[in-house]
Image (cartoon, rainbow, N blue to C red):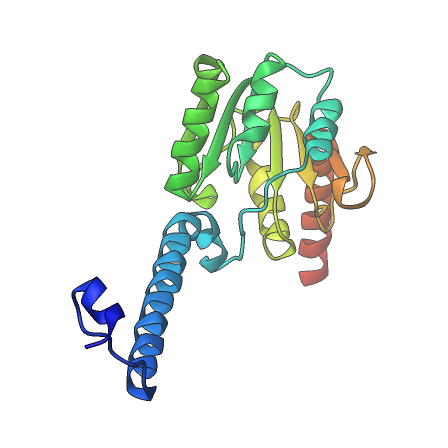
Length: 221
């Protein structure tokens, strides 16, 4: 027995190819476990936020930029009363509007985002002037809201035109972000590029909708 073996009290073992292979295999399992666990955790956290992208009409959660929020508030600067954000996401539009004096509500299909929005409203001190609802926008009437904000996608805008035109009061204004409505004529635009918002007056688009409907009926005669 060598002096090194006597000093350590255990026999020294030479590192051969088999031992190295076992060590590499063990390290591989550890790395795989860590990576796999991280991916599972990441999915658990992010899945509720991207799940809306799996709807029939793709409406993924894309947070509004600071400039977009500012443009929305600018478009509604002279307005008061109740406001609704259709597809309210993490609630930033609703919360910002409440801070400007609106009684603001958000409708969002993703429950995780709704709960997070409620928490944010409480943290920002505007929970009394905000409300967030887990609901499909097609199953809700927006007749009680004179101020409407929508972050939509092109696939839904035409159908939403008909819904809002039939429900909203003639005094309402609608602010569309990211994508304009396909046939309505905006009375104002604010911002530029991806931060552009389009402002629509209900008197204008209600009259426009009636005209299109009348023309369609005449063409069928």
